Length: 529
Image 1 (cartoon, rainbow, N blue to C red):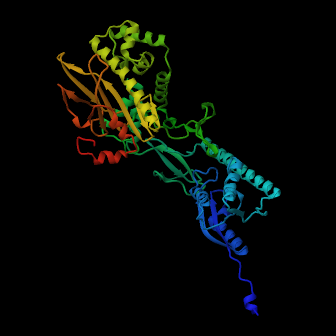
Image 2 (tube, rainbow, N blue to C red; image 1 turned 90 degrees about the vertical axis):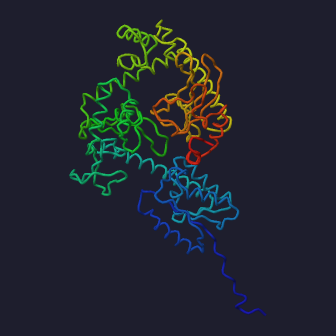
Image 3 (cartoon, rainbow, N blue to C red; image 1 turned 45 degrees about the vertical axis):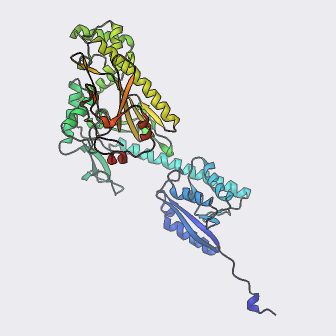
């Protein structure tokens, strides 16, 4: 006869569960501590044992890609060796405020499909799959999405109001400008350093000229561009030659100069809402008529007349001239200067730019033929340059096709004639025919680009008045002096044999996910293995 103690039922085995916690910046009642306490109380009341935790702290619930904890949870759910059979979540909105309400439903379904139950501990309904529960969850998901939309609208309106009142609304202020922290009475507190932000809700931020020589350098940049026949690339080279670095401590690039020349903050105008990316959507440019502009919001750095002159010049440079306008402009330059060349075109600000002529005709040599101008140059040299450009395009197209066939993502940037591989490796490919010394001795020269960064310069040699490729030189960054012409082959002797290759097989090997730093640092001086 069994005793009463042996007949007593053993306690049930607790359900093993993982808890998912997410806190954004919307309400304090959704703090991680509050969610843990609510989930712990529910677990105790329902005989559940929490064996794991996944937390996304301070992260928006609009998208999945920036929520590593939820991604890991979904991966672990599909793992047969997982140690839990239930997921505890505070409420439906913690699962996500996805703008597509079906997305949140899909992730919950992914858990149930793998045999993992999802429980919302603060909701007034049981997540039992009944029709009433499904309707309530769909309503909750729609409310969560609408809350995000409404919050986004309110935040945007608040930022627009601050911009209209002359306050800085975020983003880097620009070279030569500094952010200044103001209190609620608009009294200056102090300058804000980089990555330093206000901590008091009632404080505001404005923009003011930076102390020191940065503001004076900005005025000089505007003066150069407005009064001299120089381009943004030429200004960048000039500053680099002076040993002056940009705001990030790096050499100047032409794009840095253009960003300064376009920035209305230098005349004291506060501009906001030029781009938009609401609710995790892709960035889009807002039409200029919808921008918020507040003149005289900040202390100006540059005189408005100089700024206007710069904008007019940039607008003329951006306008696409017709073929007839370009030819008329070339004829006028010949009438004034008596001759035509790249240097003369760059000297006359009213003349078509070299870039516009080459875009329209393909080369200056072809433009000369169209207008009937015979340059005071060796005609064979001009013809050789035309052949080299044609070969350059052919080889570039072949390289891009081969790289893409090998699974690489390749982008050709036409404005710099560079090839970007997998978003990490950037190279420039050129084909050149030789120069002559005394009309007989051949030599080839290379020039490392100094207006834009590249990792490799691929230099192909062709014979004079021929399309036969002789060899290639693959130069890594640091092997040639930027902006200087370097002789690489003279009197039949290669000056850089370590970089010389019969074809581009070595280039294809470099593109196969080899870290550039490792490649350069481990190569002996004068060689790339």
